Each structure stands twice: as C-alpha cells, then as structure tokens.
Amino acid sequence: MTTIAAGVLDVHVSGPSEGPPVLLLHGFPQGADSWDAVLPALHDAGYRTIAPDQRGYSPGARPTGRAAYRLPELTSDALAVIADRAGGRAHIVGHDWGAAVAWRLAARYPDAVRSLTAVSVPPTAAFARSLVTSRQVLASWYMGAFQIPWLPERLLRPDDRGYSPRLSAALRRTGQTRERARRDAARLADPAALTAALGWYRGILASGARDADPAVTVPTLFVWSDGDTALTRQSTELAHRYVTGPYSYAELHGVSHWVPEEAPEQFAELLLAHLAAYPG
Image 1 (cartoon, rainbow, N blue to C red):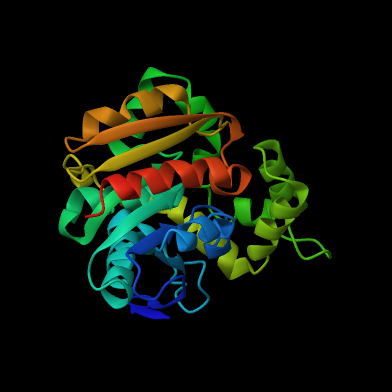
Image 2 (image 1 turned 45 degrees about the horizontal axis):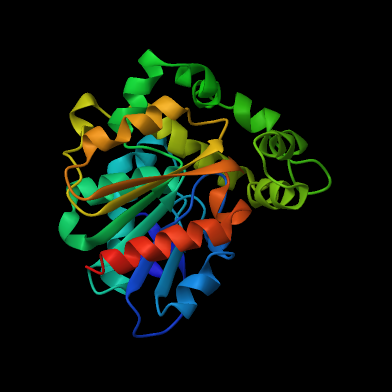
C-alpha cells in the first residue's frame, strides 16, 4: 500500500526486487490486474513491476466530488507511488485513463520518468484538438453522458448477478471478452466505486484551461490499435506534436481498445524494445 492525500492505494509489486521499476497505470473501468498478461514478459526481462489500483478503484482512497479526480490529483498519486516504491524514478506505462495520467506525469515531472509508454490515449491537448477536427466527438459521446449527476449510476447499477449488464454489454461492444467485461463491471458493483470511477470523467470539467501541459521531453512510445472505437486515428496522428524528446509510434492491426489484455505478446515486444533502448 502507498499513502496518498486521499487515503491509501493498493499497490501490487512483483518481479525481480532489484530490477528497474516499471509503473503500470490502468484505465476505466479496470484495475491493476488488467496488466497481468504483460507481467511475465517484463519479469523475465528483469523488470520490477509496480501496478496500483488507482484513486477511486482502491477502497482506501475513494474521495467524493469531481474535483478530487482532476489530473493534478491523479498525477500526484502516481508521483507518490514512484517515491514510495521506485526510489523516485521509474519507467511509466499507462493505458486509457492511465495513459492520460502518464502523459501528464512525463510532461510535468520528467525527472521522475525514465521513459513513457502511452497506450490508446494521446496527450490531452491532442485529444482536445481532435474533438473539433474529426469524428472524435462522436466517439466520445459517453464522456458527456457521464457528466450527468446520478443518471449514469442508475443506468449502470448491478443486478442480482453482481454486475451491471449494461456496462458489461458496452464493454463487449468495444472488444472485451464476455469474461473480462463481467469482471470489470463487477469491479464497479459497489455504488461508491462506480461513482468514483465516473469521477475521472467528471473531473474534466473541474479542470481549467491553465492545465495545459508542456511538451514531453522524455523518450516516448505511443501505441494505438486500429480496432479502437473510443479513440480515433486523428487523435493519434496529432500526438507527436506534443513530444520534443525521442518519439516512436506503433499501430496494432485488428486489435481493440483493450491492448494489454487482447495483444499482450505484441505489446510486450514493443514495450521491451522501448525500455531497452532507453534504460534511463
């Protein structure tokens, strides 16, 4: 566990105890176990992995109010984990919302970052620009729907099976398997957990325009998959504009949004090559 301002995060550490640390940041509506299929390759290569259940997903760190889920607060949590478990510096890997945190971390706190690997989600500025220049706004309709008070909670409440059938069905439509969709929907069966997870989206409106990030200067790998229904190609094509350090882009074909679980071998190969090229 790691203590943060909002409470205590559950942090899962594994692999060689003296290996270079790799911080793995999950997205919505997942947890640290979403990285499980990637861990063996990292451990075999000598890396120590640090995977927290992030704010809202850890029962001991579940504050209320949308302001508690702004990017500055989420990034502060990641910094606390790096300080507590990685000696103040680590390779950063993030998927979905975890990628948004990873981009912010690399842009604002490069001294804490050996390298950045972002999966699926581009820098915040690239995403925002794509909303007005492409069909991204249509793909992101759910982000607006999640802003409505109490209604998403009502629609996504669990049934007597212990998970929300609506959320499970939505995840399956984006490429999740039935088993994983039900697992992730069950994770949010607790009303407090569901509201907290939605808080990551609601926190967007609590952030101001002054939250724009500087360019990322650390070595960066951005991975996107062409089967992603939530993030459009244009948002990925804009990403390089916000990186001034070494930058590489990799596209996985025929893979959905859920890259770390759907294509762990392909992703691990890309990740390990990036980590080896930039050991930090």
